[in-house]
Structure formats: C-alpha cells, structure tokens
Amino acid sequence: MNPKTNKKLLIVGAGASGLPSLRHALLYGVDVTCFELTNQVGGLWNYKPQETTLSSVMKTTVINTSKEMTAYSDFPPEGTMANFMHNTEMYRYLHNYAKHYDLEKHIKFNHKVNSIHRNEDYDKTGKWKVNYTDDEGATHDAVFDGILLCSGHHTTPNWPKKFRGQDDFKGRIIHSHSYKDHRGYEDKTVVVIGIGNSGGDVAVELSRIAKQVYLVTRRGTWVFNRIFDYGKPIDMVMNRKWISDIRARVPEWLSNSVVEMKLNMRFDHQAYGLKPAHRVFGAHPTVNDELPNRIACGTVRIKPNIANFTEHGVVFEDGSKLDQVDEVVMSTGFSFEFNLVEEGKLIQVQDNHVSLYQYMFPTDLADQNTLAVIGLVQPFGSIMPLSEMQARVFLEQFTGNNVIPSKREMMENVHDKLSKMASRYVTSKRHTIQVDYVDYIEELAKMIGAQLDMKKLWKEDPWLAYKVYFGPRVPYIYRLNGPHKWKEARDAIMSVDERVLMATNDHAQVAPDYTVLYFAIIDWYGKRRTTTTMKNGLNDSRERLMNHGEKNRESNSAKNCTGC
Image (cartoon, rainbow, N blue to C red; front, side, top):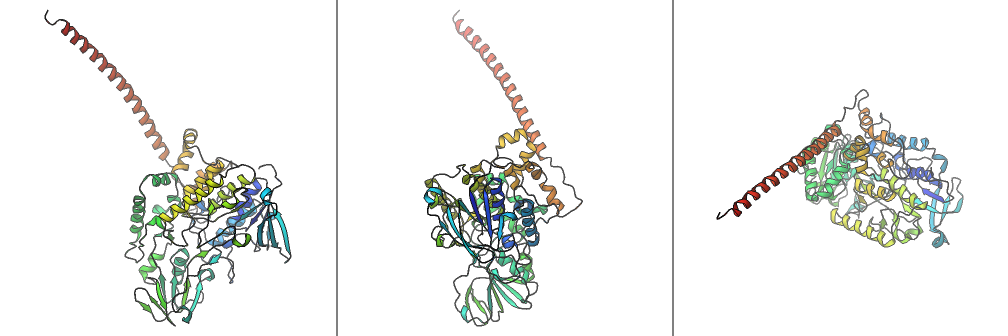
C-alpha cells in the first residue's frame, strides 16, 4: 500500500465502477469517501422491483459477459458461480468484493450529491466544492481535492422522437427502464421497439407468455450467442491479445467477413430478417441466446420501423399493420449527462457525444486533472475491468505520478478516437463511447506501467506467457506488473479454465494444455534446423570457395602455358 496522503477524494456512486475506484484509492493511501444515493452497494445490479428513477436490471437479467472477464483484477469469482451470472449472483459478487476489502466503512449511504463546482482556489489547488444532502436530509458543503464520477451511463431513458399518431394510441407505452418482469403481459399483443440487448431480452421473455410479440428494428443487427464453439464463453474467445494483434494486421473487411460467416453458421441473418447493412464490427452487437429460436417458433416476429400509430394499433414502414396492440415497450437505450458538474457546462453532451481524454478527463481541466468520469465506455466485453483500470490511471495521476500528456496531446487523442469511431460505426446515440476491449485496456495499462514485457515473460515463464498471449485477456494479467502487483495474479490466470469448468461440472478436470510444449518443440526444432543449415551452408560455401580457387589456379596455369 502507498504511504498515506492527506489528499481528499470523493467518489460518487458505489456501483460496479465506484467500488473498484474506492478499492484502489485505499491502495494508494488516499483519504477517500464515497457517496451512494441508495442504501446498498451494487448500482443497477441491485434489483429494484418497484418503479424508480434509478436504473435497475430486470428480474431475469443475466450478464452478457462471462464471470472471468467481468471480475476485478484481484478478486477472481468463485468456481461454482455460473459463467454467465444471474443478476442476483452478480450483485453477490459485488457485495462480497466490498466486504472482502472492507469498503463499506468508507461509503456514506443515502447521501445525494446536489452539485459540484470548482473551488475558488481551483487554479492553484485543483480543489472542488461539493453540495450534498446527508441521510437525515441536512444539506452540507464540503471541499475535496479530487472527484470521481462513477454513476455509469444507463441513467436517463432515451425516448425517441414521437411517432405520428403516438399520442392517440390507447394502449400502454413504457420504456424498458421501467420494465421489471413479465407480469401483466399475459395473452397480450406486444410491440418491442429496438433490438439492442434490452430489446432482445424483453422480446424473448414476453414471447413465452404473450399472445404475440413483434420486435421492431430499423436496421437489423448481428446476434451473438454467449457460448462459442465447444461451450466456451464467447468473450473469452474473442478478447485475446493474439486476435487483437491479427485484427490490427489484416484488412477490416476480412475480419468482418470471418466473424459474419461464423454468425451465419448459427442462423442465417438474412433469412431471419435481421441482416443489417452495416458490417459486424460497425455496430455494437446484440447478445442473445434465444432470439433465433423464438423467431423460428413464431412467437417473435421481426418488423421494420413504425410509420405511425393508430388508436389501437401500428402501421409499419413496409405497409403492414397491426389492428390490435395492447402494449409497447420502447427499448431505445439511454442518454447520459453531467448536469451535476457546474450545471452541465463543464462536460457538455450532445446526442451522447462527449469530448473526454480516454473517455475520462475533460480537456478543459488539463492543468489539474483532478476530476474524471469512470465507466463511460461501451466495449465488446465487460465494463468492470475497464472501470478499474481507469481508476488506476486517475489515481496514478492524482497521487503525483504524471501519466497524463499535455492538453494538446489530450485533444489530439480525443479527436483521433472520435474520427475513427465515426468512420467505423453506424451513426447513432449508441455508438459514441465504443472501445475495443483489448486495445483500450492495453492503452490504459501502458500509461501506468502495468503492460507486460512479453519477450521477457516468454523467457522467464513460458507457460504463463502462453496463457497471457494466447488465452483470454483476463483482468488478473494487469496485476502481474505495475503499481500494486498482486502476488496471487499468476495463480488466478493459470486457474481460469478450472473455474470456468467448475461452473458446469463439479467433478470435471481440465485437460492438460500441451500447446506451449508443442510450440516450444517447433521453436527448438526450428532453431536447431537453422543452426544445422547455417553450419552446412558454411561448409558448402567453404568447399565451393576451395573448388573455385582450384579451378582458378588451373585456369591461370593453362593461360600461362599458352604457346609453350
């Protein structure tokens, strides 16, 4: 643990981003306090059955990322936990993390932050004035040296512009933010608008009890299964360093084509009415194991965008219509804003576009960098390890280790990322904070010196090097090196497969992985052959030179004897 510092840090929110921020603030010896609006940790993973303005998962929500790829870097999940945890199990993991590291004593529950402003002496000190309401309803002002905003980006339901005739519709319209469970939808005709992860989940769940479910999509989507070949979690297959390196070297169209071919082998997206115009890496994917089956069963029908509502139904853009619709669920995503900080003037958001260095630091604060946003990213993979790494970057900077570049470089980085995102992704509010999991976490790790020297690792520990490079990019990798190295990181990495297998089979044993040995033999044989070839080549060259010399001498002798 770092020496104690007198710097005071406020963390806003004790959810999946706030908890690792708190954990690492303590590792850095910071005087840290966390304000949590509710009476429990867990954020949106703390299921709330009642209607609330706070975000909450549905009763049946299962995480889309596997437990090993979702874990924090020094807290591997229990082997018996499901590879894709139900929200109650996910909440238990977060609660256990907080308990294990004794985080709750630093959290003030039922505390609401009302406003955050730069303090009068900010230009010299980088301090912030915070107005908040405590658990007894009293209002206070306090000054902090730093602020971490950890409230996530699933905060405000995004309602699309009203469809023609929507106000005349007699049925019920809700946002998926308000959807808790299937009760009340039995034997109803339901239209679900939007085919993101929430839309797919709602449609599949209701298809079992509703009369009919219609799933509306403007552009279609590529659907990923949680499980890949041989039962492997797909994020553990996709998020590997060697795959990331290959993708960086091959044309984008080739990467897209390979993955699209694989997805169509599961089900033909064209035949199922889901094939989009964009390529697979041009939009955030939909993760849903059951949607193709529900479509095949006819309990979910895919429809194009809505042209207009009628009093009791809807008309679609292709001219088809439904005369009787009972319920409409708008699964149209979320918007985010930062009105908490200087009335939204400091971190301005327009259509979910925001200019933050590494999706964390406002460039206007480049002289101090004492405020950051944590968890404002959308990867193909889990946000939690990225939030943890973001917190580590902030705390390195906050405690005096300058890891942030100049304001000019920060702005160049922001513009570069925005430009690449605009050229790659479909234009929508959903694609404004996209990152590639491996590339982004590697970028952050490099900033704090947590990136590995693979050449050195291959020499010193080839088994570990193989797991690190060819295996899933699990978070424990980033505790092998850099600040706050964790002595159990190697064991956590080497036992990943065992914990994955334990989730489905109590008595199964992980088969030995001889791939490293195989590559070592090839490497040894290649070096041996190269050495032998070089020796033979030298001998051959020596013989050729000697023969060439003999021939030259004979030729010269013949020339000298001419006319004798």
